[in-house]
Image 1 (cartoon, rainbow, N blue to C red):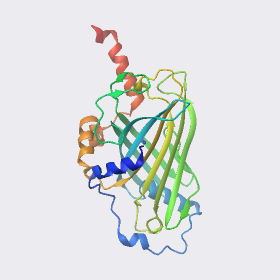
Image 2: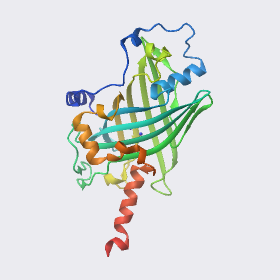
Image 3: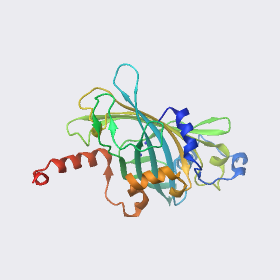
Image 4: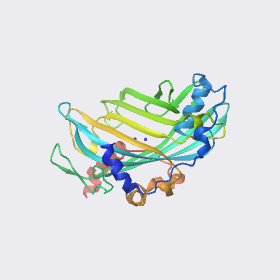
Length: 297
């Protein structure tokens, strides 16, 4: 699942047009908070977490993010690289007894930095090499939320304590982990990923709201993606982004939807997206196929 000079990106929000947010109602913002609502209570914490990142009900939750990616060479300033339009489709199911299951599908296609113009290729500012673009696909990824904790495939979004600031509830998660690199046997991958969601307290505390509208921000630092052609250079990418839940894929701006149809159409038909896909393994598989003797005949 995963962001720009945000002012320019928000300038780009003029280009975002009419982005339809996930439905809410005005009274939610000012709804009286029940006297027994306690963010420190473990079950309230679980339900608040699920309500903010997804839904307490059985429904599909859609999200849209804009991400800016920068190169971190280990010294000096970050090097601006490009922007990603990031779309998530999450299938949530309430299983009873405060068990919530989710199946995530995520795609992203790259654009020029702080722009909605798709990248046709990547002129690497570090190496000077022109590279073909390999757009992002990830899923299906299961996740289970229960009073005992979160069961995930991949990196664990460890939640920090909920915070109440003014009339908004803040949920922060972090993944600081190292494990064998699935795309590079024998190597270790290090992930540092941070998400922050905020929602109105009135929505979070309202028992009639299953999925709270949120503002979300993310930051992460990862190794170079194989398709970028960075070789063994030290450093990696740094991402910063923002996003929100939306009412559905039809709510995406027209230029974003055009890019989705062109570059990552799989997200439009998740019912038939059965096989697990991940950006790095897909790229390496394609390279291996292109280099095979059979392809050279």
